[in-house]
Image (tube, rainbow, N blue to C red; front, side):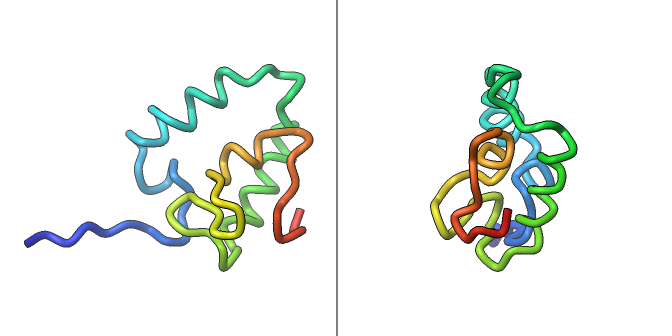
Amino acid sequence: MEENRYCRKCLLKDFDEEKYQSLIKKELDWMDEEMKAPETEYDKRLSICSGCDKLSAGTCLACGCFVELRAAAKIAACPKKKW
């Protein structure tokens, strides 16, 4: 039996491009530009999330969100107060 493996410390786009495209990318494209954090802020937030012990397969274990969506929202905040 083949074991399903996934990257626990990866963002969804890094380990499952198909799921990223069908879930996250569509939501990001749908978001109004006024609601989005600047690209530099988004990248900084994802970098912090990537090093967090609460990241598991693109999901934040502290709140249950997809970190790529939370990081994209201008008014969002990390539930662990890391950004």
